[in-house]
Amino acid sequence: MRIHKEGHFVIFSTFLFFVLLNAALYYYASHTLFFYFVLIASIGIFSVTLNFFRSPYCIYSDNTQNIVVAPADGTIVVIEEVFEAEYFQEKRLQVSVFMSITNVHINWIPVDGKIIHYSYQKGRFMAAYLPKSSTENERSSIAIERKNGDVILVRQIAGAMARRIVTYAREGQDCRINEQLGFIKFGSRVDLFLPLDADIQVELDQKVFGNQTIIARLK
Image 1 (tube, one colour):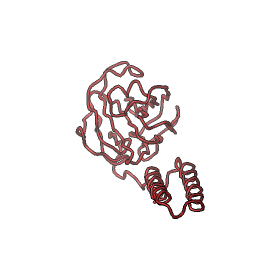
Image 2: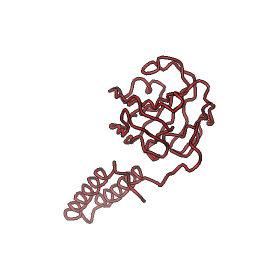
Image 3: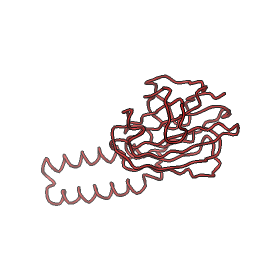
Image 4: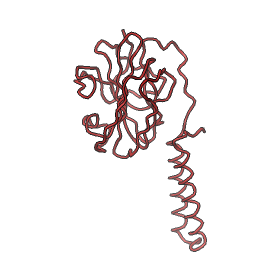
């Protein structure tokens, strides 16, 4: 299993902590139920951490023109027309993907184009599936301009457990599907704000896969 670069330090630190903890318990209390309880719990927590930072091979091999691919693994929790007030200040179609702690947490570039805006806002850490998390939680916003002038906004949103949003995208960069946008650690959400005439290809509660599932087709 490949491990994402964002997990190298966390996994090493977790492994070292549990090795030292269990070594100490083995020395002082190797024949107690408490030792075996801690040992089993350590293996379980380390396995969950290892699984969280997995980085599966993921390439979109079809034509990328006029499509929007899922920016993350997860479940579709919002498909609605909204007034996007932070960047567009006009109505857009919002599609939101909620990532549970068991999902791959890599974020992907959803369209081919050029990054024309990046901003970061501090905020709260409400559960990421709640509607207010889109405007009140800690978040990063990335606007991508397509060749025809259409602009797609991607918003990385921290959740109740997420405490760090990593964004690789920077203004002025050309970008394309199959490139990583960033990473959100431990439970989160990604919002897409699309043109009103976008042809949505997913449904509420549908499971989607980052850089694989087509979210919408653009005119």
